[in-house]
Image (cartoon, rainbow over all chains, first blue to last red; front, side):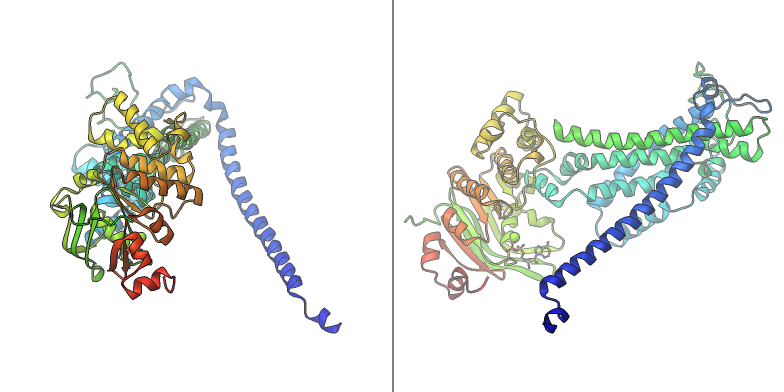
Length: 313
Length: 256
Ligand SMILES: Nc1ncnc2c1ncn2[C@@H]1O[C@H](COP(=O)(O)OP(=O)(O)O)[C@@H](O)[C@H]1O
Ligand SMILES: [Mg+2]
């Protein structure tokens, strides 16, 4: 009898073990849920604060379309809004093809040697370069050395430098995540390595690539530091009927200075003198944030839609 | 029991082939012929070089780093190392261990190779899809779902789709690397039956670690051990009267 109570049977030990595991599991789940809850609460607080403060201006059409005022109240952010999108589109037009080429080369063609390692390390390093440093380089090189001044061209090239490393990494990872067996399947059908890359690997990686591009667009759209000394801090009034590409008021002129939304927030808060400064700043922040949220939603939707289209048709 | 007139009907011939991955010799002086219109099985314990040999036949082994070879491999008397690998692969198709359909529709999978290589009309593609799927024994199961995602098929169906994709290219030789090892017994049975049928029009070369499968599907069988070809011959003979002690030990399950 004494033996039976002091030495638990196998079954009893197993049951105790199971209970202990279950308790640990509940504890870990609880802690993790609390952490996620905290992160979410902070996020909701920030987003909510910005949206609530800027709500008045967010749906105000004249705020969204008119030009900023220097000294009076009631200025808008029309040119800044346009500039942000124009810079974004130019940046993507330059950086997506370059990154795609570099990523395909690194993922599929680069020999496994010292030069490739150096290139990969350089890209890693560049992707963690502070954006103000990219901006200063852009100022010294594009603005001064090349003589392009504070301009859309200088700004979008600085943003390109800022964007390429991240895009290359995302695209490269997307390509490398395509299973080996897909490469084998393409090659075994007599496709060349190039055809396999273009017709098998890129389509398979496309959902991840598109998601990566749209997310990077959100980062580019909200970037301020890289633009302050490259695209400049002034927004000439734009005349959408002016197609003289040398005129400062022609929206498409890439040699005109172009303050963006993010730069505008920085500028009015550091040197603005308009009486409704706070309202303008809050409104701009809300507009900027809504755009970036839209990019994020678009990224998820586009990635899924492309994955669906690839598989369904 | 048929004996095979090997020399007369050799479709693929491997002659004194050595192959190295860097310093490691994976194939040692292999000489073997694969008769036309028959199924040749390659058996042996894992790591003995079966896949390596199979992948030299369509030069997929070229893709590995630092591969080097000596000796010759011929298909229809033409040295495979003397022709463009992509052209070789049109003639020598391959099916892999794990089903690897492309993430697209069933029909697009079958038509993928022909579309890339030739201008084919829509009507031709429809016909090609049907004949290839019929010959892979999949037509009746998918004929109403040709536009459905291939990844929605079961593993066994996916593997038969990969067979259809390979035969849609009209290869003369079909290589299969353990094509049933990822499949359930019923699908395995179907694929084994297919191998027999396909050997009427194609020379089939299959790697398997399953000896029963080798006896069921193959006309000729080759036993490998540690990169060497121990012995090869008509399957019934090899299984009934192995000449080498090591073959006998392996077949009777004394090691493996
Ligand atoms: N790409 C490669 N690089 C280096 N060694 C390899 C490579 N592929 C296979 N090997 C080696 O060659 C030997 C034979 O491999 P494999 O042909 O895959 O054998 P099997 O298919 O009979 O299991 C193994 O020892 C394996 O480790
Ligand atoms: Mg193998």
